[in-house]
Amino acid sequence: MSKDFLKEMLAGFDNFKKENYLLNPDRMKDLIENGQHPDALVIACSDSRSCPEEVFDRKPGEIFVGRHIAALVPPHDPTDEDDTVAASIEYAVEHLKVKHIIVVGHTHCGGIAGLASDVKEGAVGHWIQRACEIIDNVESKFGKDLSDSEKLKAMEQESIVWSLNNLKTYPVVRKAVKEDGLELHAWQFDMGNGKLLAYDEDKGSFKLIAGDVTNATVTNNNKKHSCCCGKKA
Ligand SMILES: [Zn+2]
Image 1 (cartoon, rainbow, N blue to C red):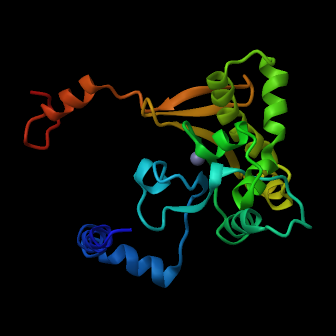
Image 2 (spheres, rainbow, N blue to C red):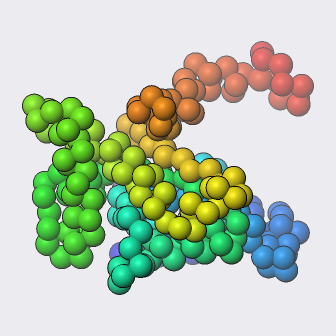
């Protein structure tokens, strides 16, 4: 990590303070005095290209985020010594009373690529191998004749479905879904195309839900009058 990078980090914090903190003093004061009340737990990959706060344009206090490699949610297991994910789920559901849990996987995921390559070594291998049944799930859905790229693409989406199904094994989640209307979602950030997909459980497939914005749309919006009437030029 270069000194220049650290300088950029510090400058970034100053920028955050100027553009968020100082311009909205009441918001941070409220979050401190009254606590956080985020609407959603977002479970996302640690990948530096898929930051939920950036991708979904959220401000401090708006989403509770759990991030780890490949955004995997293992099945509920009270004997599991690695209860990091379970702790995030429990805190978000029982204490923060979130209304949504959103698993956000993404394309070009290194964690899923590692699983496809059968990486088993080290903590990374140990972690991703928890989801090894994804490979069998993909083969049972699509057969064994997929190309490597087709298999990887299928595994990226199957991992999100796997995590969604595993979420339902957590007693706190099941209770909140039944009694409090907690909603579960499985989304995929398509990094290559700048689009957001969601898993439709009824149809068993992913569909586009956001990001259908074209360069033409952006150009037109940029041609609006400088006043606030919103009319196009
Ligand atoms: Zn990833």
